[in-house]
Image 1: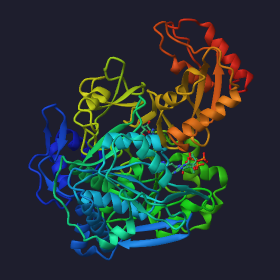
Image 2 (image 1 turned 135 degrees about the vertical axis):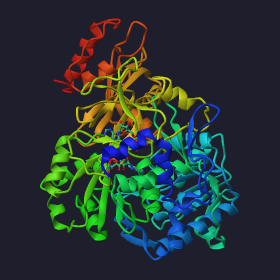
Image 3 (image 1 turned 90 degrees about the horizontal axis):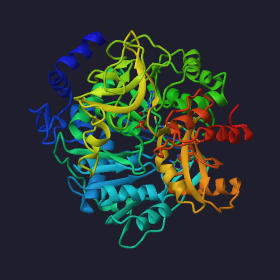
Length: 629
Ligand code: COA
Ligand code: AMP
């Protein structure tokens, strides 16, 4: 079938299209309702279907006689550990872990927070929660205690699952003090905390609250799969918005399973038995969808990698893993490829390995820049596919549909809309613009399966944040254009969300942290382009009158503030003290103008500015530091 025919069918008859795709999964009771709308007018896919996502991802394969096939490979260069799980073994581990959670009182609809490093137990924990029909919320291990506490208060979990430590190259990060601090900071106190003890650092347990994972597991009885409705939530994943508070994206079971299974055929072109590796972290949406759920729903072998593309031990890590396990499709972020390219510009490591089984390299998280794409393509000889997606959608909005009809690759484009996504470019007034013209990228409703339809704990937030800007559309927050061939070019965020080494962060949240410093009167955090990480935040700070702190001293203190409040992944390193910030006459900081100035781009001074002299003042300061030409 051609891409165009498949895409048109998904547009002309969405319910028929997705009903057919849903038949690829083993439901307890097949949905009669395909797309329905609730009292608030929000769409739900497969609302009355009965299912269990963990069953579809594990038990189903065992029942089908594939129990001895490899489900998961764990490869940890930082600990020198390798381990494998067949589908039967993984199913048994998940059933037992679900039994452990049931023993702690976890039942359908309860929330469980998972704060873990990249070890198989993190994947097992997610599937165990899903098995009970409970709702997991994985918090990336790089987030600091206040971020964890925010999520604890919002999700109000019954249980937290964690490990004694994570390992960052050669640095052991003890999780227990972070957990204890988060418990102190949060208003909601989870009943139990289960700690997977790792030999690199064994944690002390708080009596009555903390449990040793292995001890509890030894006493647990395997639990069966609890049936849930297609519209019941599978997980909450928090992501950065434009405000200080992260948004809890809710993913429903039915649409998620159907869309992810479809994507493995349509986009990634992998089948049961193939090895699929998303080199990300289970704390991000890519990890949820493509380390855990999609590969297992498809019966593939997934790789859980505890390491980095460089330094563990060298810039050959990606290629070593691909060769060693016969990876068919590799998926990672441009920043990882840039890190490899920087260390190994001639791709000498790549040439040491047999990559004959690797058919396609996928990239997402930020736009794949043309030089990196060219370097990868030239050296690997493989198609390099950029695809665009968001935590909110859970899977790619635009991609090269390799499993339907491979499309010619255009550098800088994430190719064409995935079947199900009606991608439009709109102007300020919500009117579609001509081909080739830039505008806001919006998705015409209804959104396809897997996309969010609520923000946890806030009935109006989804509508307010995404649906009111352009009625009838979901606004993506990204800007870009569609060319005359229908290829989509995503040019970057049009809001205050930034992307640092493939990690999505809110400048508003960093600003809130900086503003708590006693010497700071106000600040603007701006994304500066960075050769390795894509973007890094820089703080432009105005001091309170009478404050005498030096710029160097302030910078050191703010680095510490941001690391301890949000996390080291923020990569906040630069602070510039300014006499004042540019404002409109109504008092709004001109962030867009600042962004252009710090990145040395052409800018137009807005007519709404209250004092045009401030711009030259700022340029003079930045020039004196050699930050702009
Ligand atoms: N727990 C604790 N700290 C973490 C962490 C974790 N899970 N992940 C990262 N950090 C820390 C790092 O140790 C580093 O700390 P430092 O400032 O003390 O050195 C800091 O956060 C910044 O991390 P990062 O930006 O990742 O830089 P890095 O130098 O460690 O690694 C790359 C650079 C490019 C190799 C790495 O960013 C990478 O592999 N990125 C891919 C991202 C990705 O997969 N994104 C998912 C979307 S597809
Ligand atoms: P996240 O929710 O963390 O997946 O981040 C989503 C955001 O990352 C998007 O809104 C984009 O700004 C950016 N992004 C992800 N993938 C791409 C891509 N392939 N091209 C351009 N931007 C991307």
